[in-house]
Length: 261
Image 1 (tube, rainbow, N blue to C red):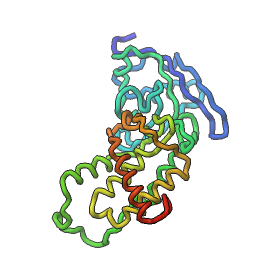
Image 2 (cartoon, rainbow, N blue to C red):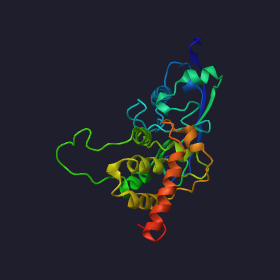
Image 3 (cartoon, rainbow, N blue to C red):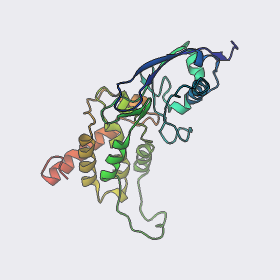
Image 4 (cartoon, one colour):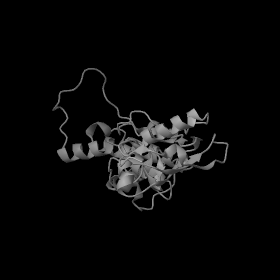
């Protein structure tokens, strides 16, 4: 074995469809000679090429941009969402495992009632889209772009709004939370709009509708454990959850009917 390669033992969750029970399958021969310079997804590509050569079904996993932007690549790696680095799975490199002396790797899909398994490591995250559709929009005038300084925004608000907007919807927060809560995702989407003057028109309705939808699609409640923020590849903080809770109380009192839009 070359000094820059690794021999791994992979325990991969295999599940033909949402109707099957699924289980772990161990791969040893297919995971030999893995370069430490590969990304985690490139390692899976190599394993799949060897499986295809043996006329076996390749491991299904989600991916798209492979640039840490889209959030499609979420995997549970040795019990940690996205693995040992606080980054997206596609930006995780095998040298991290070599540096830590890890050769035994367990790979699972996100585990949440609201994220049903489609096949193997692929889950259906349409529940996130339903939350966005419930209130993740603003009322703006159509036509030409407004002048740059027509809406003064305090820098602190602008910076915090950008922090919330950086959420890529990967679902790591849900996968890491013992309650499978989507509070960090939902609060980031509510917060980045609610911090800006353009988002004030729907501010009360937005938080009521999106929180209602979050509960409706089956996510769990938040108990402030903090695992969500600890694994978030964009390092979104728990202060967004606190802000959302304050908005929810205010909106509920204003409407006179708790969590009813």
